[in-house]
Picture 1 (tube, rainbow, N blue to C red):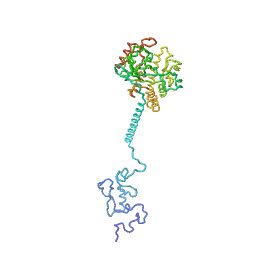
Picture 2: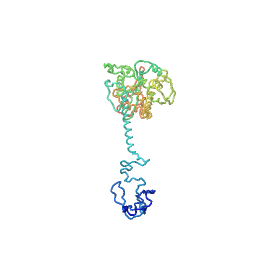
Picture 3: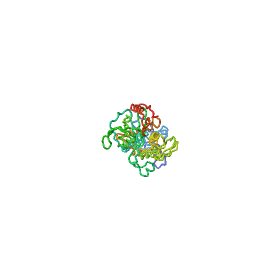
Picture 4: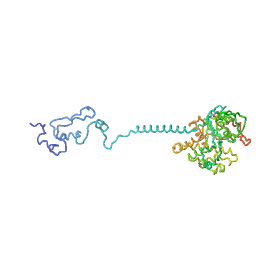
Length: 429
């Protein structure tokens, strides 16, 4: 008995796949004439292929009909049945992606993690820089030792002092910078910088100003020295007992409360100028001074540390020696502050850190001085240089015994305006 279904026995099978034939099509498609796709059944679940129906008595033409109706066993093409994303499919468990295909990058995730990384780096760098800079400040002046102080007004007052300290200078440095070799320290320049909401004011105090030395407590001895009405030049107060007596004398003779004290010596000044790459300034008239080493032509030029020191120290070249020197000092210090505070310095770590290092190593400040206060001072000086504030000398009414006498009426009005943080209307002319 023939167990083959009808149409499958004997030589009626024709040229079939297998049975020694050379046919290219598999039996499932060429021989099984009964297989054709019946009515589509509802989906039973993701990844389940459509099942064929078996109808007897169909001929070879059913294969062609199956192809035309869209049926394809997928046997010869290597197709793997299953819904996209299912097991074994691209993007599914155990699956892969076609050759050359990769998933689209998740840019939102990348941007988020990049932003987080940058923020962390900025915070860590900022905190490290703050503690590094704060550790370099030389807080050596104790203003709590100053007695009988006037009440503090509105705004903040800085006493900025340039001393002739030769600390850190070699014999060769002293010769090159024309500083001489005098022992001790004296003040070459003194300025009051008022920072307030009504504008910033920079006031130069001539070193030859006539002042009265009041009662004070010695900074080292702690001994009280009674005032005798003795008058002397302002820079003598610093030479007598240092910064605390200078602050005490300025407050006593003006009635203005000094909030912070900042001092810089010769070497530090020159180092800052060199670290910032020089300072551009316009010199109104040419002048020479063999004592300071100054030799300048008129016009715009960039001064290095040595030249800058000669510029701010020169007084013998001018008729009104001390007054002209204070004007030059104001002009240069404001230009220096402007140069330090520019983005090209602040945003360039190869310039910013050397400038900060040179400046902080050279500055002597009061014990309550913070980096914020120091930054406020420099930006205020930059504003004065840019025309946003007032720059002036202490008003002078005449002289006595070679000392410059302040105009008491104008000084009283000036101090009143500063204490009330009002716009300064007093002039030094």
